Length: 141
Image (cartoon, rainbow, N blue to C red; front, side, top):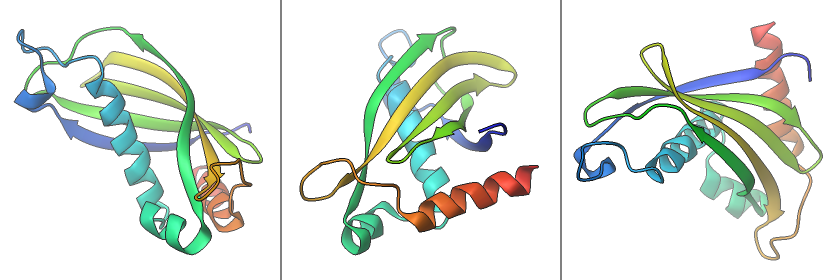
């Protein structure tokens, strides 16, 4: 895929997201990235409960890598970016970045897989989801 599909979701850091030093606890960045992916899917017109109930599909994290570059603090307003880098038969690879203003805090690579809701076996990406992703790609060109 030559062009990336991009989506950004704002996140405010709450007190509950931080450790005793007022710094965002490392695992909470994963929560922020999950929220952004969920909102990106919603922006494409898909709700996860509907995918499960109507199509029998779940989207699960297959693998991820995270590079922590700089900390975020209580009350910071962050931007969580999702850039699809590859659409496969049953998986999507996403470059995710978390920034505060223009400062880069997190670089991550996440691979999500589409699985059958009952068996958790890999399943092809439903055509309507793939088409929605590709349509957004065309809009960006």
